[in-house]
Image 1 (cartoon, rainbow, N blue to C red):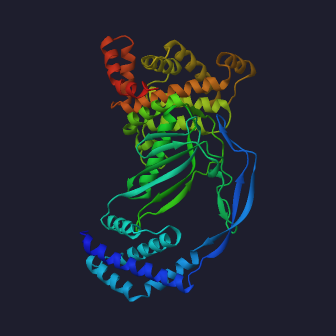
Image 2 (spheres, one colour):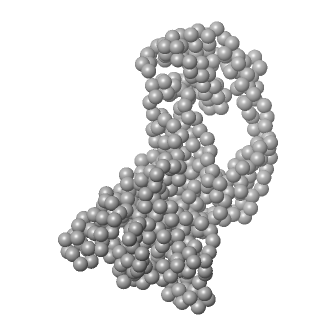
Length: 457
């Protein structure tokens, strides 16, 4: 659509002047008044935040009365639409936009936004002009500022705030995040969700809600791969400066269970996280995102096993089995390998992770122990008392075995998304690298991108 900016700007400015004059007149006549609405204000006592997340000594609900312009707003919209100046602007704008049937909607949204800002925000000479600029961007389908703020579980911050990249900020929860005001006639649909352990704010230039969802999903994926943690959002609020397009909304995960594994970001981890974020962002596949509905490959299946092991509550055997099955998806061929699966898996993973400062002998031993757990679980059993005690003595607790396997899988996933090679060919290179130096050198070359990403940890 070709947009005559100067003519549109002149029309909208004239309409804005009429709206402001109408509001001023009604205020002067005393016919424009807010109504009083009761809110429940939750006051939190003894709020603290540390390595175990949020703790506080309870919350008290206080009833407060605040002015609301909701009814006055609706009345003003009707009044403005009855003015001859409104009809003139609508006719002229429809002509300029070549009969676009959405033109009445564009003007209605502009009027509504301007009225809201005049009634609720301090008015200055830039108010109408900024809205006009945004509306013209909407008409030209240009990007506008949009973003989200997500409540996260599974990650604890020691720094107050980390600017991970431009427009992306991770911060600690604050007491005011919990002290919300809600109309007494409303309810708290999110009150049952666990308290966030961190907040993630993302802002960028975009056009629609799908772009925001992708940004949030990608951020959560990167945080899960930075360290072994059950990072997820419980809810996030989306917003946009757009007047005619996507405006905002809130999404919830529906998962009310606490995070199974939580990691801590220390002050000294800040630079590592920033570097990791920058280096891995372009490699995250669409199939890793929770909103993805397309075809998946073996790497996406392995990532799903990784997240299942991180997020799902239940017996430890199931979580270890999921982690091992994630490694199997990456390092066992789909057909033709029916014997010595545990041996093949441990040998390949041990050889691969030796390139990332892991002891291949220890890797093989750990995978052997975890594979035993996986076999028992998949055949409908559970570890016996003596077997469990033996593993607990070796890994301090069963969770130690789980975290070791999850870390192997985490590194393997990063490797897998950075190599551009078929699965079976990659497995053959790993096998050949055990006895052929040329294959070993080729393997090292394939791992260079993953090494660059992981060297900052």
